Amino acid sequence: MTAQTASTVAAGCAAPDQAAPLPLSVDLEKETVITGTVQAAGGDPVAGAYVRLLDRSGEFTAEVVTSPAGQFRFFAAPGTWQLRALSRFGNGDATVTADRGVNEVSLAVA
Amino acid sequence: MSRESALVSADWAEKNIAAPGVVFVEVDEDTTAYDGGHIAGAIKLDWRTDLQDPVRRDFVNKEQFEALLSSRGIGNDDTVVLYGGNNNWFAAYAYWYFKLYGHGDVKLLDGGRKKWELDARPLSKDAVERPATQYVAQEQDLSIRAFRDDVVKAIGVQNLVDVRSPDEYAGRLLAPAHLPQEQAQRAGHIPTAISVPWSKAANEDGTFKSDSELAELYAAAGIDDSKDTIAYCRIGERSSHTWFVLQEILGKANVKNYDGSWTEYGSLVGVPVALGDEPGKA
Image 1 (cartoon, one colour):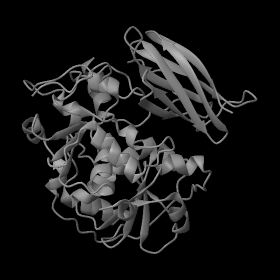
Image 2 (cartoon, one colour):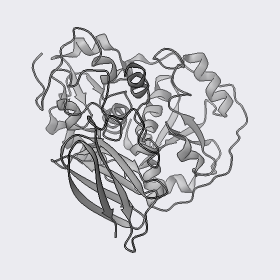
Image 3 (tube, one colour):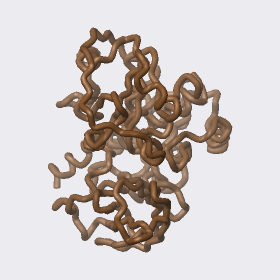
Image 4 (cartoon, chains in turn red, brown):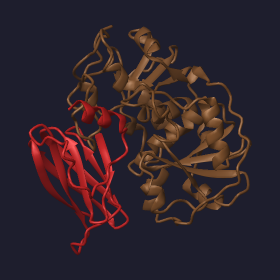
């Protein structure tokens, strides 16, 4: 854990590649992963959308840019979260109640 | 300082892309964003590899900063316009960094990369080469940089502003939620620090809120203008955003950014830590 933790701390805050598989260092017994795809009205994935994670009070917690396949991913904590997407094709919202492990959610913009 | 002297709009930027003496600089940690398309003529700076010492945790020194800017073709008299992803977090960090080393004319592009993209403004993939310069930096202006001992002494005395998300402040999260939560440091915040998330100062498209909204935000949060102020976050980039708002847009005096921030403070032995949503006692 030590080497991995050190590299994580040094990594700063820039959003990691959203298309990459979950790093092996991510412990799904501990992490609450919220992930999914942003889709336009016709069901096409939206690349380059800005997806933000808002806490239960509506306050900003994080933001990522979707991958070429429209994917996003957050590391949160168990509880209720809001997702909001901004894109050139429109905006969209979703609510997710997350548990530890991987929580899939779809997010439509129009 | 004021909004007019420190900030430029996307419209201004698009009109001045090729203006002589204006250098656009994209600052990201992940430079693949720049490589996928950038403002025409903009050069890139990598937050981690260009601005941080490669071995110990600190900035590049004056000579290294001079060599960096000289090689990238930035002159002392150039107007440097910074922009980037992550709602301009790292661009604001670079702005503070350029100020730390005494650059004369530096501005932030309001809304950064996000507003530029959402507006569907043009991006270029052309390689950018600028002729080398002989850049001369000043000694670090420590009136805008706080160190850990300054922060410990400021508990209960100065305005301490924690700009992380409410869940990080309270200790429920250890990092922004786009990063894994397994972290070395303790959770919580510096006792007596007030919580004013950086995001409250920005609109959804990454632009800054109006002067009156910003003034009201920090007044309501309890910032005492008769006291000096230190802003911090996790690694000092989100707090650069708030430092920019307080000193460069609102013109408040004696505002420092604590670049060690929570990754340093939360690892110190023996310092007080507060948990939960309240500031806590000194």
